[in-house]
Image (cartoon, rainbow, N blue to C red; front, side):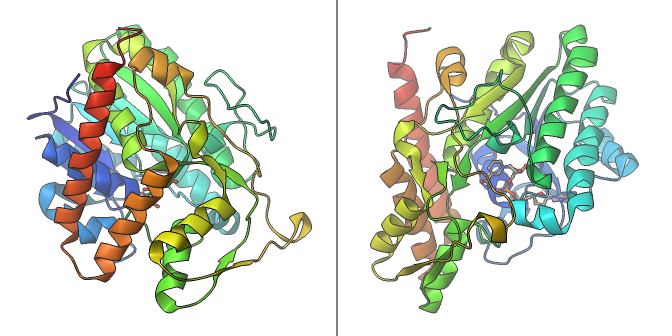
Length: 364
Ligand SMILES: NC(=O)c1ccc[n+]([C@@H]2O[C@H](COP(=O)([O-])OP(=O)(O)OC[C@H]3O[C@@H](n4cnc5c(N)ncnc54)[C@H](O)[C@@H]3O)[C@@H](O)[C@H]2O)c1
């Protein structure tokens, strides 16, 4: 399978954010005609500005909580494929701003789904949630798509609620009309160049390393499914393409996580990152369970469904994932052209993905 988005009208929400900017660049390389809805980018060094995304799409600033405005954008842009990534995406911020988090992640998502329902040209809808949408039992097994939803912190709870919305819209509307595919996608902890969000481990590390300070690590023993940003995005693209061909078969929920090898604790990630950066140190700032807001200690994803039905699988090792990430930040600190660097990273990744796919014929 090769991606075929040439000339397709695609709407990406959250294109000014980390994952949305990478997705927009990738879609542009595939020849799509893209429009984006999001708030202002929060950081000039972030992926959106560094890659020059504004010039690659119809770049629209719009709060997704305003249904009428969102719908009028649908009427103007006439999207055929919708990737919904816009969200309040940070766990710690969700403790400070629970209402805003639920507003954007639940009502904002409902607005996107409703606009898709009313605007008949939409054929494929992908709603990006998270691995944190599962009720976390601190299991050693990966969560499967059939496992129970839940979420203690407001971010996780809001994404579990978004999942309920997807199920309701799918069963009430889209699976009835049989012409529109609707899927929710649940990825793990995504890392890669151009993320400068507060309280995310890789941006925190790079900020500290650049400032010559020790990296303060809140949860060194927490285990997470680390994956390069291009891994889940490749999965979303593959899923969108399959849904264009067969909306009913590929609708539903999908996990996109790393292989076992990518499931590591935070300490492993930080140590390897320092090693690649060439210098630096870290400090254990674990405050103990009682003195910090709840965050799951152990979280992994079972990706059998995507492996077996989509023939998607992660192609980067843990080391390759961190190598590509650190290489991006190093290039940026050397003042290189980050659009060219990012295009090269996408092209390299795509070659891996295509070759894996053509070898994986077991279920074809
Ligand atoms: N980064 C990760 O590790 C990770 C992991 C799993 C899932 N996700 C999910 O992937 C998606 C993208 O994550 P990210 O890391 O790129 O997040 P990000 O915070 O970098 O970007 C969020 C985007 O959403 C937009 N947005 C926020 N509130 C909005 C509103 N009210 N109206 C319109 N736009 C709004 C922002 O402008 C930005 O473009 C999110 O849905 C997130 O929950 C991220």
